[in-house]
Length: 73
Image (cartoon, rainbow, N blue to C red; front, side):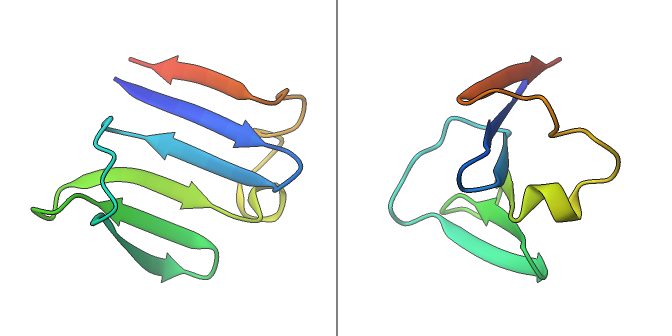
């Protein structure tokens, strides 16, 4: 199950695909402002988007309060 968080002050949207938190995790910018996060074995664990208000289509981040968090099943 994925979890989505949004921080309007930093204008960052994060889609968490796994709870894997490790200082060794790697990020790869695949588009300006879009970073795919991988665990130590190369599995995708998250997606960071900044500035979210400019990169996310429509008004998906408008009206989310901080710390906004919802789950997608």
